[in-house]
Length: 71
Image (cartoon, rainbow, N blue to C red; front, side, top):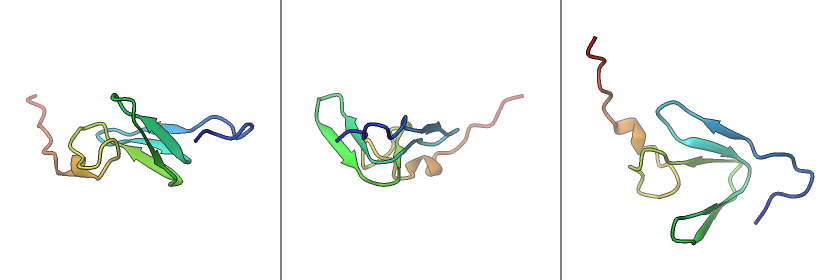
């Protein structure tokens, strides 16, 4: 699966304390070489490694307790 010619660049949005959001259908290659696809309009990729559906975000990061600033 690839982007169609002329479709423009993929839009990727980084979120603070959350997932990486990628616009459009995506194909993700995992470290072992396997590929998974998502046909959603926006795909959330996990960055906290707490998801039960890697590489996709399942909002597990919301349960993470924030550390208070010691100042």
